[in-house]
Length: 221
Length: 106
Image (cartoon, rainbow over all chains, first blue to last red):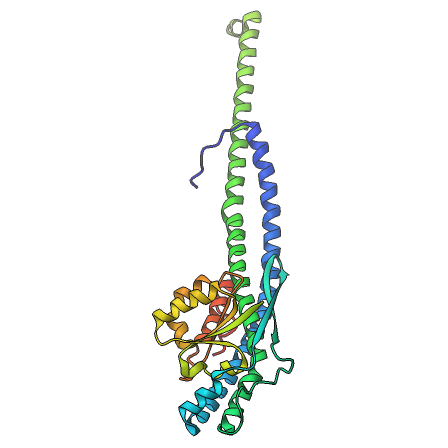
């Protein structure tokens, strides 16, 4: 492994050991965060899927109704009928914190107190198909808003999970092994130094004893 | 206070006007991209757009994926359901999990 140069000193060793402890704890925390995010995400995404199926079916049906309504009326009358909407929808947004991700919550308000006050035209010149079409769209609107909420939440959570997963992997597969490697390297280097000092001392001691007692001469005799 | 916008070809979206959503009929992708940018920076928290447009504006939409607002949600247009909406949900799953584990029964 390509290791960057490190000084084999005790100070470096202490520093690295402290760093390793932090990294291991961070890794554990991030892993927990990732698991919890994943659990929440899977719940949300399942809900998202069912909602989307429902909304897609609803909007497709409403579109069919509108095509029918158009077929039964002249274009001008239809345009005039829908030209000046009576209803207006406002959104209030707040956020909910899921594992440090702010996911949106939408609440909608209508301008007129009765939410079903949706027909912006008199009934004299339009066909009943148009009424049905507008009604079918109105019925699907609350689900569409919830879909928006869930889908946005899923997107936000997905990007957060991706980020967290990258961090976990970087710590697990690169940072921590690299530090362990460095610690091992420093330890071996220090041990080696210690051994060489020991040997040098023994050698010096031998030489000094030799000077005083002349062992080697006695051995010859 | 935020509002809701609907973006797409006129035939697909004119009905939403009756409900009180703001509709923005566009006829080509360039116009739609400009409009989308304008809406996203404006006071719209939710932008619905037709799947046909979503297919053409993928790069623009991806910019807003990680922003808290607005939520850009594809809906089927008058020409029918193309499955683009589901694909964007699947994309989220793939991004988070690494592989598709929700939709693989199909």
